[in-house]
Amino acid sequence: VQLQASGGGLVQAGGSLRLSCAASGRILSGNSMGWYRQAPGKQREMVASITSGGSTNYVDSVKGRFTISRDSAKSTMYLQMNSLKPEDTAVYYCRLDQLLRPYWGQGTQVTVSS
Figure 1 (cartoon, rainbow, N blue to C red):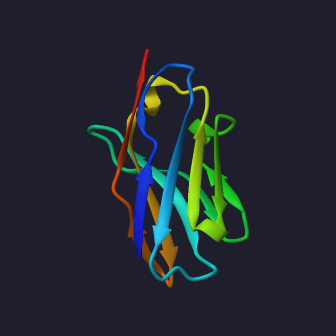
Figure 2 (cartoon, rainbow, N blue to C red):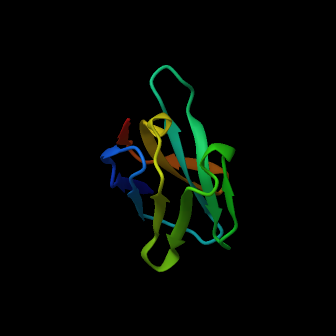
């Protein structure tokens, strides 16, 4: 399984970005996917997750601002990020879990200027 994340960049506070994560390889049904982020000097944290059935979960700090979605036909996951804040600055990673094993994509940098 390979994951390719894209869509990061530099944006002003209050702006929006859309991250994408394309999965390839042996993708099985019943998996779950998620976005994580890691800011300098901080631990990696879960931002949002989505199951194959569409159930979602968000960290409190992004609720109401970020929306996770997936297109199972394309094996692609998205993260729509609105009302971005400087504290959202981090490297964002996508993750896929199947058969109790996590797979990680490379990170994509999101920088929000004040």
